[in-house]
Amino acid sequence: MAPKVLVSDKLSETAVQIFRDRGIEVDFEPALGKDKDALLARIGDYDGLAIRSATKVTEKILAAAPNLKVIGRAGIGTDNIDKVAASKQGVIVMNTPFGNMITTAEHAIAMMFAVARQIPEASASTHQGKWEKSRFMGVELTGKTLGVIGAGNIGGIVCDRAKGLKMKVMAYDPFLSEEKAEKMGVRKVELEELFAHADFITLHVPFTEQTANILSRENIAKLKPGVRVINCARGGLVDEAALAEALKSGHVAGAGFDVFEVEPATDSPLFGLPNVVCTPHLGAATTEAQENVALQVAEQMSDYLLTGAVQNALNMPSVTAAEARIMGPWLKLAGHLGSFVGQLTKEAIEEIHITYNGVVGTMNLEALNCGVIAGIMKAVNPDVNMVSAPVIARDRGIEISTTAQDKTGAFEGYIRLEVKTELRQRSIAGTVFSDGKPRFIQIKGINIDAEVGEHMLYTTNNDMPGIIGTLGQTMGENGVNIANFTLGRSGAGEGAIALLYLDEQPPAHVLEKLRATGMFMQVTPMEFTGV
Image (cartoon, rainbow, N blue to C red):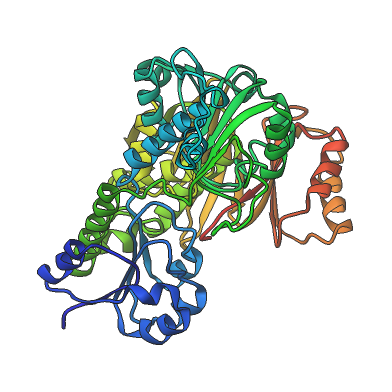
């Protein structure tokens, strides 16, 4: 029986025909994306669901889809899909991360021109029969300094285009190495320097805990007077109210926004300001980009439904079914090791070295490498997957190496991850016990035996009496239950670490209370998904 796919958003006829040509039964029902009740009633009949941004794939929708095997998003953003619920139900979530990069980058450049020359307002004035040449005095882009926040796929294209416009380009990106920045012809800087010197600022980062409100009221006050701000990335990266005040005061000369904190945006503090250009999330809205991502998602979904091949999956490793049965726990461990380092590392990563010892050294190391790298990258970009993570790492100049060796030591096999940054080296090792559960067995060269939990707290300190009591008492006084508590040290009176497996993540004030004791060098909450 042929697989069945529902297309609930607008896809081109060419993309729909790909399913038919591959022998897949397809129903093209673009109206369903905006009718959740109708979608709920229909979804149970399908093996695949192809969508854009209008369709909201909620836990309720997924619960009504017992036959669903794959969701394909024509585009990169997957905020409209409950990926946790999909994973629990065994539904693969795919996106098309590289289909609209040029289009979005070009929109950012277009917004820079529009803001610099006040084109929309000047056009409206001229349409009204006015001739206000003196009113619309603009500025050139040539010779100006562009600050790019996020120099990944789209940001990298913006950097390249800006250099062609003879702009001076500086970039802030935690994963951008000096070597890669030199190849790109940009100057790698920290945020403070970018804020102080950029004439134009353009954002190209995903919305995460780390990037939320990256242009806060406090940071907007640090911007160079007369700066112009462009956001074609994600809403929530900029404090819109604070930016509106800075625009009114003249501290910020102009802004171009394609994305907003609440979308569809029917109201915003930025609306109505004469020096602001706004568009309704058009970054990927070109004929070429929409066609590219539609064709890609149809091909990817067809491949999976017909052959089991997985491309650009956000919640599944690119391995065969046979490999997955053996490698599953080790892939999970690989992701946890990467996530541990990623959550701790704020500066640019230069080198990643992974050692596979014993039984794991005979497995699909390419897939395991992808798991480690994706774990590292997800701390900054949650939309990274096992396919795109190595590409992104290479694009950012990160050197990746591996070693496979015969069994040494007490374990049948283990994975050791070593990461070098501009400032330090980090290392962590883990293994899989006979029960199939991953364990951390060494951090910073200190031997431990730590079960991996969803909510964890990592602390470092100089070995001294009172650490256990302080951690336990502080958690207890604040109602945070400790499921598991692991300690390790280099030696008496030397460096020591603790890993607490908690039932829930402690509130910020609890973490501050621990830091205020002066006993800890580091107090870091950590999250591990899929444990």
